[in-house]
Image (tube, rainbow, N blue to C red; front, side, top):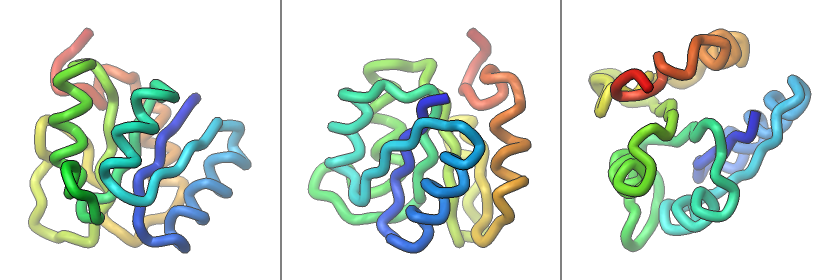
Length: 121
C-alpha cells in the first residue's frame, strides 16, 4: 500500500516510516501542510495518515488537507493521528489518539477501504 505520512514531529514520522516499511508498505513523508498537498498530488497514495496540527501557509492542519484533497478526490482514505482528546471524527475520518501501538494502526489499515471513506464507493 502507498501511504503518505504527514507529521511535523520527526521522531513520530520516523517511527511510522520505519514501522510501516517493515510491514511492506511504500511510505512517503511530508512535514508540513503545503508540502503534504504537493506530495499527495505527486504520489497519489492509497492512504494518508495525517497529524491534526502542523505548520503550513495554506494547508495549516489535517482538516485543511482533507478538504483540499477531497475537493480533487472525494474517495481518498485518511486517518488522523492526534494528541487532542476531544476531536470527533471529522469528515468521517478515523482518529487515532497518540500515543498508540503500531498494531492499532495496522488493524485499522486492514479494515475495508470503505470504512476509511466518508461514504461507500
